[in-house]
Length: 282
Image (cartoon, rainbow, N blue to C red):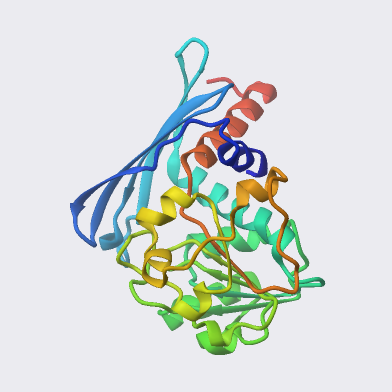
């Protein structure tokens, strides 16, 4: 993910902002996300259905298709839901590795769905999670997830107070994280509210040092950025590529993750290459 986003921010990837087709406003959406890299190209077709919450059906479904960028021949089709879960958390972990305060050990999760679970797994690769705090709008979900992952369920403010790393992964339309709850130097990964009219973070939170995956994307898709009028310090790809310096770890940072097509294509290519190397077949 570091390499993919570095390539995006330095112009080595051709990728438009995703096309979103509202099937039913605030309830059902279809998204198209293409990207072209020197060694692979492809697209993700993804449905985002908030209406599926509290039903047996996932809120995100879709397919990633890969093509050889030299011949144009299709080489793979994969479940986009699994790829999306993994790459989103992997990007957050990559950013957290460089932005979190020194000796970080306390993680707060606002949200208890699939992205919360994926983030626990990914963050475990870049830090020692000594304490895991969990809040959800559904207290039963928070308690169940806490039991599953060895954390503690609590209210949102209590979870965030004193936390070193905060993950906000919700489908909220209104802010669930207030900036005055954040400890100085904390790092926030915000991966929800990918709609120009939705918010996860209030203005105080957004006016910390803001990192984004794409300036173009947040300008049209992120209600948190649009509503707060916060100005990004950098794209994380610029930081991964060494074009800009990472903020000092003593600064409070917010990473607004919209999810980029090249993340899906790079993750799918990694899976494809590993399967081919293992002789797994078609």
